[in-house]
Length: 391
Ligand code: C5P
Image 1: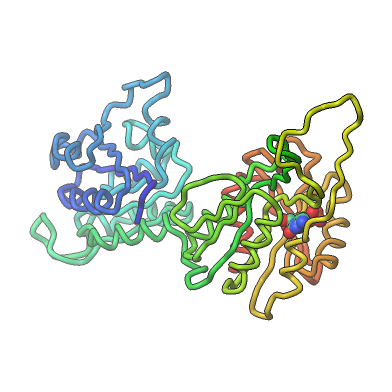
Image 2: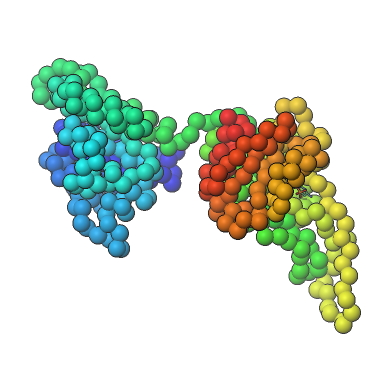
């Protein structure tokens, strides 16, 4: 379930540290990679060997164990998708609220920019102390997720609030942060990616510079959101969802037509050649000193054709890459093609679009309402497109 996720678990010196062993096991069981950072006090409650055996990773305590010229607290922040501090003591809560960086765990917190979850554990009086409560209020305001302690029997022989939350609740809360809500569950989405290749002869073709990254990012994210994805791609990729490899616009057309019948949605992110060679040669064309004339004939416009036959409950999204008058051309295109949305990107800007890892887009709907997706990675842009259209 959590394949590919990197979990950084922080442990402070609180009695419930032994319960974190179960949390580590849960993440490992769900295929996540686990890295552990502890405060020196935590090792009074659990041993480094136990933590290393369960996480199958080295445990970090020292702040100045510099690896590959990267300070340890920065190295730890790079890989992790989430930082979970469980249990977190009143002392560490106070330090992280006020930016104290006196050990590896607190320094890592200060440098961490991705989601953070804390699960406090302490004596009831320490929990109720106004300083602790004020610190928690500030942390909440800073969008730190707090899994509150439970009421119960405490290690100090008292009864009250302060017992570390149930490990399953901490795990589920983290999972919900890591895996977005499955808004596309039950929906079939067909997505095209890459640039088509039109054969001229046995060795030559007419192609374009599309890398397929945007279409693949859309397919990856639709899959994450629970959709049944069919990726029709000119780029060969191995995925956990169905991938149909094609080369030409005609092959793409046939595959799209077939899959679209049972789909809820089609996203045409591929750069499809408008023309193909009329008389393509099975053998390599030899030069003979005279100009070579190649006659081109039009390919079917897949986006337009599918928009014509789409049923009322089907959504069709097209892309347009323009080098000038981006919005004007996009508005004309949505009317011409008859699709529900057009995602427009400006290919005159070097650092976005085509082969780049980043993109900046405008999404235009049938009523010509425009929303902008600011420059971001294609993965993030893909998620934003899906949330905008299906959210
Ligand atoms: O007209 P233009 O090629 O700019 O339109 C781009 C959009 O149309 C893209 O969504 C592309 O995937 C789609 N398209 C198509 N069939 C073609 C040409 C483009 O579906 N033959």
